[in-house]
Length: 346
Image 1 (cartoon, rainbow, N blue to C red):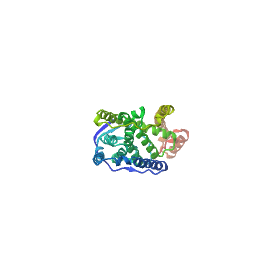
Image 2: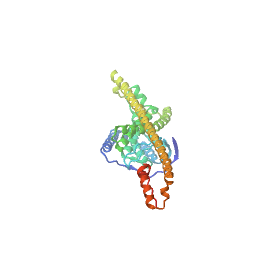
Image 3: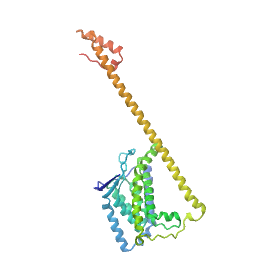
Image 4: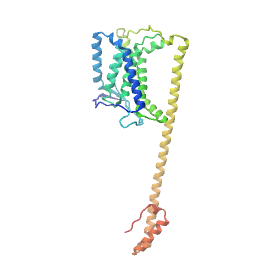
C-alpha cells in the first residue's frame, strides 16, 4: 500500500461499454439511483436554509479533496483484460474525499450521501478510467453508509448496524460487490472459469483496501459519536421482519452464515485451483524452455562437429566444382543435419 500526498487530475474518462450485459446493468443501476433519490425526497424538503448551506459547502469540497492523501493498493496479480477501451480498474482512494462523503451521509442521511457519492464518482473519473456503471457503483457507498446509520428498525442487529465502525466496512464491502458486477459486465467474459478467476482477482485487489479505509473512517466516526453533542439522534421506533417471529430471527442468522460459508468455500477452492493451475502451467513452460535450450545446444554442437568433419573431406579441396557439388549432394542426402542447414559453396 502506498500513500500519495498530492495528485493532479487528468482527462475526464467515463466510457460506455456497448453490450447487452453492460447495458442491462446500466439500466438497473440508473433505475436504482433514481428510485432512491425519489424515495428520500422528503429528506431534502426537511432541510433548513442553514443545512442547505452546510450541505452545499461539503459538496463543493469533495472535488478538491480528492487531490489529497490518496491511498493505493499495489496489485500483485494482473487482471484479465477486457475490451480495448476498458482499462483495468485500480482503486486509488482519497481519504479526505471519502471522508467528506462519509460526513455528508453521517449528518444529513442516505439521500444526501447518494448525491455526495455521485459527485465523488464524477470526480473519480478525473483520476481513474471508469465506465458508467463503475461511476454509479462507487456513488452507492455514500447511500449505503447513510442508510445504515439512519435506519430506525428495532433489534440488536439493526442497533449494531447503526454503529459507524460496523456500517462503514459493510458499505465498503457492498460497494466492491457492485463494482465487481460492473467490471464483469464490462469485460464481456463468457467462460465460467475466466469469470471466477476475474472475480477472485478483483476482490483480492480491491477488497483489502476498501475494508482498511472503511475500518479507519468508521473508527474515526465512532470516536466522534462518543461525544453526545456530535452523536446522531438515532431512534429505533420501527418494527422489522426480524422481530416479528422466532423463525424470522433464525433465518436472519442462518441464511447469511450459509451464504458466507458457501462464498468462502468457493473462494478457497477457486483460489487453490487457480494457483495450482498457474503453477503447473509455469512448471510446464519451464520444462519446455529447458528442453528447448538443451536441444539447441546439442544441435549447435552436433552441427559444428559435422561441419568440421565435412570440411575436411578431400573432395571439397578438389579444384573441380563438379566434385565439390557431388560431395555436397551426397552429404545432404546422407546426414539429416544438412537437411536443415543450407551449405553454399561459391
